[in-house]
Image 1: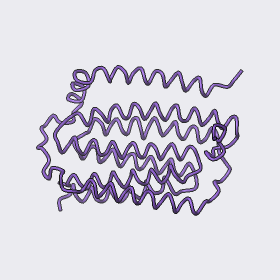
Image 2: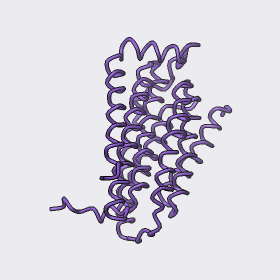
Image 3: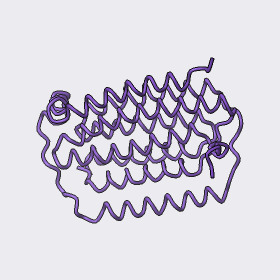
Image 4: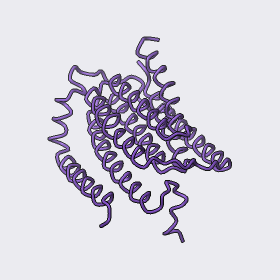
Length: 164
Length: 100
């Protein structure tokens, strides 16, 4: 096994652990911090998969902006009421998720995937190639995404505004 | 080189953990965080396929997923603030005004 494979398995273990912490910890702030760790590890995986631009965006947008927003709302609301435990529902949810994970893993690992990846060129995943792809083939979805973000900003202001 | 299958199985496991969070947690903020986790598992699948098929389209799609996820988080948290102001609770079980 070469170093990148070892790194992948180490990151996988930590990623699954931090994802479990997001779901199972009681304190909401601890959940958010575990989610930051998970998002950062996914960004490392992106960089390992020759997608450095998307990895940087992941750290900036997800681990940066969105998580600050989450923490801000947690601090703002300061929810103190602890969640009631529902053991039966936990068991049901865990079994359903286990079935889903097993089904997806069986479906995905049926050997149809290409064993050897296409050799990556020097430019693959660079900001130049991403930008070129974005502004030629995907220019209409790009513009629609900008309108979507504008609508989201206005919607958030309207929803969270204190009623007069 | 890690085979594609391992990335896909890792993404499936993370997606399933996110599903547990959405199903069983009774805190709206944690439910939203679990949805973010599921979206990221899908992003990981896209990037793994993009690398193994040598196509940039997967990375472009991840870019759009991030934009939609940011919009979803903003609107979701605004709704959470609005609901908390009216009900003083974050429990989704308490929000049953439209329940038949």
